[in-house]
Image: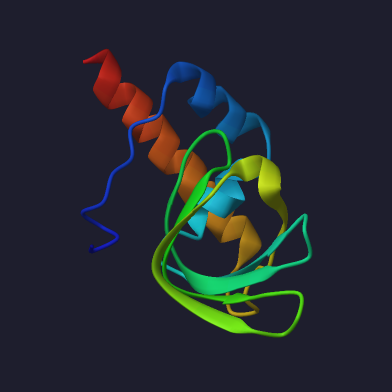
Length: 115
């Protein structure tokens, strides 16, 4: 799905969490291919499709690297936020611009809800 057309509606609680934590950075990575490391030491490499206000991530075209070195391919995977240890920020991403863009999107979303 085209990133510009994709829109995720967040509850007020999720919006506050996104604004007050670095969750907005992870949400700003939607559409970007990156690596997410899990608390069980596995790594998932794929494109981030969506991130909700609870840090749950949906990825597409994902490769899972298991502890024993096997690589599994998943066309779509859902990762619970509490299972995420790290999200790698690709070197070409400007962190401050990504955060500001994500916060701007949250403010626009809130303004549209109030109308």
